[in-house]
Amino acid sequence: MIGLMGRVTGTVGPGLVGKVIVRGARRRRAPLAHPATGSDRIERGTVVMVVEYQPPRTVYVQAAYGS
Image (cartoon, rainbow, N blue to C red; front, side, top):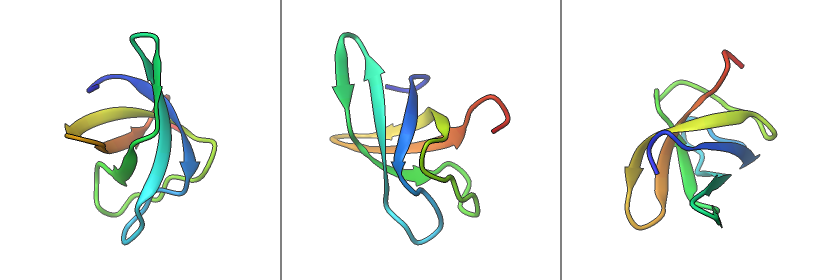
């Protein structure tokens, strides 16, 4: 799952458990998301990249494309 791109569907930020939709290998997943750096706040609709994966459904993300 690391390196896959997704879109935030529920705000990701400090003290928040957000959600993202990640597409890969013909499947869509909706894991719980946390910011890769503890102080980032990533708003709904932002394109993100998964930088860490903790099974079964937790990801750490960062904004992609300098967003």
